Length: 448
Ligand code: NAP
Image (cartoon, rainbow, N blue to C red):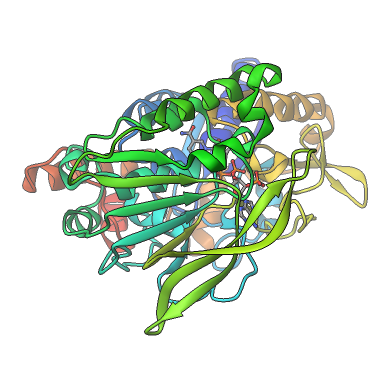
């Protein structure tokens, strides 16, 4: 029997565990899914926006995998400093699969980026998702105009969350403190700025369309900016998903803004060059106007536009961080691999594997992780004869205990869920997430 550790319980980790048990004979594998957080589900819990209930409900599928008798969830176990060192983990299991995602975010590298009021979208997402590492900054406090930089689905998520009213968010599991801050938000204008044209934007049509049908906000576009994009003017040759985006944006041209509605302005061909300071905080973003270069890129035009902003969120992509003890390519933020086998000095390292964003970079939707996990698991199972020859300890939990680690078990996680349902009831809301380490660990250890 192979003992396998999967590090990370987001979609890629859970799909890896699922593939492992599905592709093996009944008693051939035992899988421990480790997570540094006391809670499972990774970005499905801490990344998918609270108002996207259908995507959130994927948790039910992930849950049924983690309840398989051959899979064990061990929360609050960090691999690396302060937790279980990677080399120790390797001695406890026949194989380790790293599914640790892309924890950090890309920077713009422009002056003013570090001013108070300028954040990564990841920080904002963590806040409204009740991530226990999140900064309690109220983000929207005092802001009337917000600029979101980027044109991917994360930019759309954060722009939509800023444009929604508290009444729309109260039925979700958004933490009480974020709900309180959003309830008194004075943000009236949200600008989402893309450096390229509408036909190069990375958001998907369903997400874009949603921006045009918010109860309290109206989406606007600037006709001249759309018209700069030759593919927008003549979209016939574009792939179908991009054509659909173009059709949605076309439908917004000239739409009136309802009196009193928030404005959600989608802007194109604006490259951020500086975040301008006012009274010690962000005051505006300076953009250079760009123009299409004829091959999908853009050129600067030497003309500039400042957009007032009291809150700036950069949503320009996630970035992987090096997992302890593994080779790493800082340019792509990924671990070098061949079909999921970690490559050391260009050679496969049996027993070490990767899946998900740390393998292929931060792209694709949740479902993309399924084939990705399957490929990795096929490599691992092909290596099984080699791996089975290694000696490992009988019970990794004992070794983790000797390191002073006290995992939150599946029972512990169920206790956290019950505590969140109770918190919701006490606030007259549905289940509400516990936002802090102490609260999560108190409930989780109580139930473990
Ligand atoms: P993304 O899709 O890669 O989009 C990043 C955006 O940032 C692009 O518009 C990019 O523009 C822009 N950008 C990059 N560097 C820039 C710079 N220096 N200056 C200005 N703009 C810059 O990344 P993401 O939005 O973080 O999403 C990550 C993945 O998660 C995606 O696969 C996404 O679909 C997925 N996701 C899905 C959902 C959903 O299904 N609802 C929700 C959230 C995330 P260029 O194109 O010009 O480089």
